[in-house]
Length: 168
Image 1 (cartoon, rainbow, N blue to C red):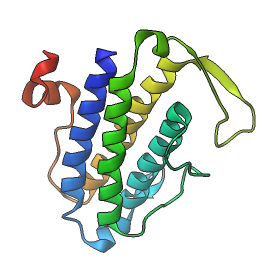
Image 2 (cartoon, rainbow, N blue to C red):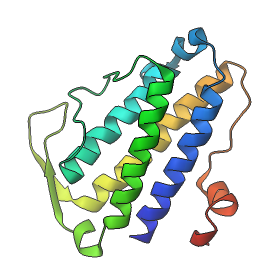
Image 3 (cartoon, rainbow, N blue to C red):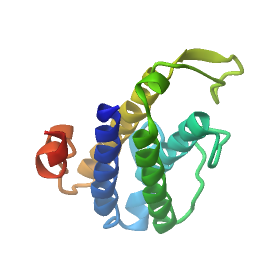
Image 4 (cartoon, rainbow, N blue to C red):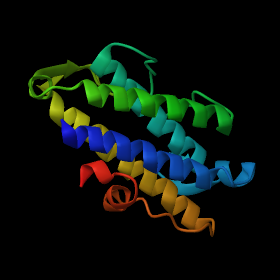
């Protein structure tokens, strides 16, 4: 449980750093295709939020439930950033509510991309959520680098050393 609480805190920290860097982009840069799976930095950030909402709804039965992985729930960057902050708070609260029994319990859901029901333990799905965010944050980071923007240090260990002393 402690691991997921740390990952939730790390996730919020990394998202704040990333969104701060992205806030300096022009509208054209924000929407330019950078070669990432979802195209632009804005579309990739939208996907991360959308996927988090899907997973949190599966985990809790609460919150928005997007219908597609490429949904863009906001047109404006500030609205997207506000929603990201809110979602990160939800993720932290959820991680704090977990018990060992819950993590090891069976979990079933229907993927957005397939009508077939999937079942397994909860912990691999939750691990996926954090891994998924890291993967796509890396794509945004690559997009920023491609635009000639300063590099960010988003490594988990950097978070632990600089912000997560309680995890040492």
